[in-house]
Length: 375
Image 1 (cartoon, one colour):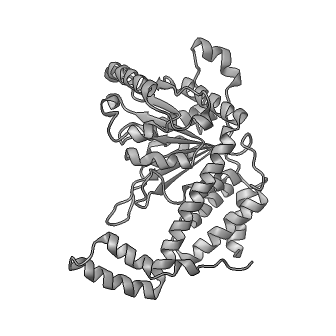
Image 2 (cartoon, helix red, strand yellow):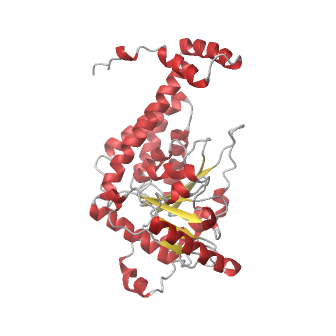
Image 3 (cartoon, helix red, strand yellow):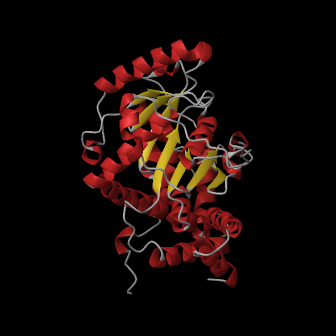
């Protein structure tokens, strides 16, 4: 590692590092991990390897960062809800005013003492990138004014870089940085594009789907895929003139979840997916929602489902990074580039199809003669 990368590591993982210095180091580390520059990628890999060997060598699910994914369509109020939820979890705003909400339900009053409240929180907000320019506004952070200034919270907006799945290609690595920095809970806010957001489930421990009132009208549409992997479903904006519509939406989703097949029983056991009404504006239902998150976390730890899920996620991201690295190497190979130019001309003339072009590229490799390097 370069001296700069070593300094980032020391400030990132040190115990007596001032909060301002640590937050700055976390920002630098995330920038390094998300970089597309080859030299920076090398340093990012070395940083992650050093973190894995020294800090994350034997993380226990009960002590490592608990990761919550917040997904949903545009306009559902994800960022505003995360602001309200984060201040409830941390217990106060940046000025020290108490912000923890109270669950007034009978079960809530009984179990409030057992609710898990992390002392630190990180928020990774993925903003959509332009397909043409590659740019991203990174505006979600502006809807978290108090949370982003909280000394116990780190809010980082990142571009999706046109990556499908609701997250970007490096979200899993960034989450490792949050764990190394001792953030006890990490909230991942997705782009908000519908069914393709299911990939976020491969990066988090709990999947929360948030929908606006009236969102139950298209259960068979864009959100069906993500409904099937959600561990909790909340209807936001359940206040004022939208309260009645929100109640109908809640009933629609409860009925749909009761009948649809579930794909994660081996990991979740007998967990019943809660469907709840919340209002980020009036701050209602937030305490009840977090109590269910706490219950889910405890259940997954005790059953071993959390450890199993993280093993599966490790396999998934290994395959994803492998494909990405192979594609990047192929893009820089001169013989491949020459072959590709010929195929592009053939495509333009209509002589071949894209599938035929891909097949001819693969045929240029002698896959039967591939051998592993001796180590």
